[in-house]
Image (cartoon, rainbow, N blue to C red):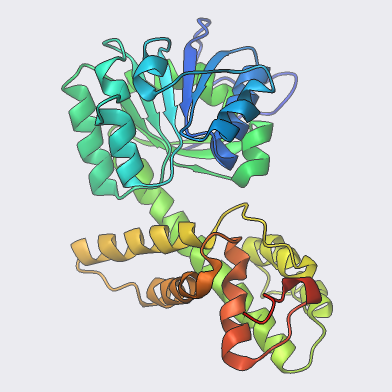
Length: 322
């Protein structure tokens, strides 16, 4: 069920808790830094952690505090957000030598936000429960801008106790909290549905613009017409301007969709269900990564078509003839 709260006056709360938890945020990339900053600005005590010194300095520059490692952070917190990139990083953050599970007090809550396979989310929840720790399986969507504004969409599943403890944190970081079930794995399942669509829509938008250019259409006119037509999508409207501006600064990188669409593929294989459209999009992102664009914005998948068909992208978007 979707649960929304307006921003500003009359904010709807996820829970009635009046106790402000001490919050840790592990992973201060674009999404994690935005959420950590939003939580800090809403008056919560927030401790950050990241392997990057630059990321730590960025949070400290807005008044946040940082810990040296996840275990040190967990000693200071009641609730910990995990906003890292992949399953290997989640494993290390939770159960590595300096993992938070060794130091978080019994009854503490882990809000696991990374996109991982549903089966892994289930296992993580079980392993944390063995240590008397709660877990909310809570992938996030909305990008860096909405993270910074505290307006994310959260696809969450977990126990009533986990939701109650998470309430003040979710209120501060999200515009919408979808309560999807009472155990980990359900939130991650919903996130995979979202990522399948997001990846397919980005790849399709790139292919459509590339076709328009190949047929001699001016790309800005393509954007103007399609955004007013039935073929529009949120991803077309959001990502095509990156192509038009030639700005591939990674708000969400090609590598992210290589990872996420691979999770879709692996989950489909576990379920003996074919996902051919997602597989096609995965091949395009993999090709973009293969020719060196993995760390660029995910809209850089259009550069595959530049290589294959010789189209001329808006000037600043050309890759220097590499």
